[in-house]
Amino acid sequence: MAAAAATALSGLAIAPKAWSKTMLSTGTDSTALAVFVGTTPCGPIANEFTGFPAQTCEKIKWQLTLFRDAQTGRPNTFLYEGTRTSRRGTWSVQRGTPFHPEAQVYRLMPTPSGPALSLLSVDDSVLLLLDEELRVLVGDAGGSYALNRLWCKCPAFWGADRRRPPQEREENAGALLFGSG
Image 1 (tube, rainbow, N blue to C red):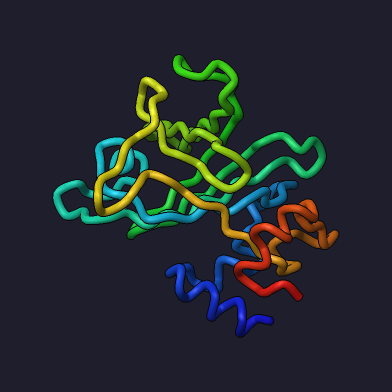
Image 2: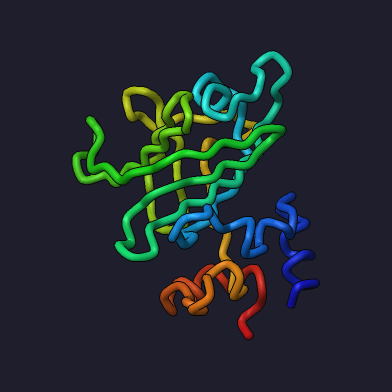
């Protein structure tokens, strides 16, 4: 299984170390809720949040892990790892944008400081980067500002209690990485 995971992940340019239990731990009573990955164009909002210098930027790789409080299930911390940089902080869920009052928006606040980032949750599988006015960032022919959920059936990701995503999620997405069996 580890070899299959490493092979599947190598095509996504994500190091297998991302699945170790210690990498997913925040040192607090947290559990990993989801990992989102993507490669986005460079742009002011993406460059500001990631800290990647705009003058040398072609694309930005993202691996965003969202953690929740193990007791309450509420959002608590995030870990961004990307092209030459990483950031930690807190995140929250907000409701609504000026263009869609029922939209679910994830707000990432880096610590100790740094520009916040807003992400539109399209569904459980896709997050779109938003600008300061909560409008979806539009990419170009080279790529989009979308992050896609990375699905895994590995116990280290789902925690000591071996929780799995809901059955319909495994059938729809998890099988794509590790097969149906």
